Length: 116
Length: 112
Image (tube, rainbow over all chains, first blue to last red):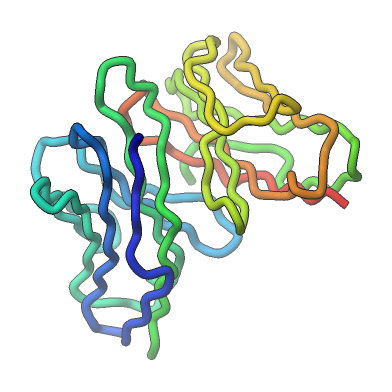
């Protein structure tokens, strides 16, 4: 069965510092991979998605993620944190095998705190 | 704005009651997914519909049911409510399975 692990439930960075949020997946076949962001009292907003076209995926708000098959990872990065990046971030996978329903399996989430 | 709408935004009810949550997908999307978000379970997939037909079931209780109508909107029915059903319920839609899912703002259910 597929699973997603997000290392670190809380990450704190200073404004202007590098943001690195870690995500590892467990799947026999490389899945579709997604990062979502959730601001307080809001729904989930899609940041970026990996569907095998390119291993480095650029998303919205300056975020990007790199798919590394050998490490079964899909870490999210941003070169310079902004106060508005403070939110909860979710990594998710979707099975790409035949009969794929597209249902998402989510990690437990990482809360990003940005200090001034 | 994702284009996915959910009503109501908040719902407060008592144990044993029944409620209906409504979702309208993005224009053109045929797939609708329902998820539950709670502090102890995180985000859990409940059920998926594609063009009116049920495609997949996740950790959905027998007290819960859903359907997708010909106009593609979907409803999630929760009955015999318990305190533990208090959670955020999200609807998401996609053009087809495997495509990115776009989430609605959610319905916050509080069972007292």
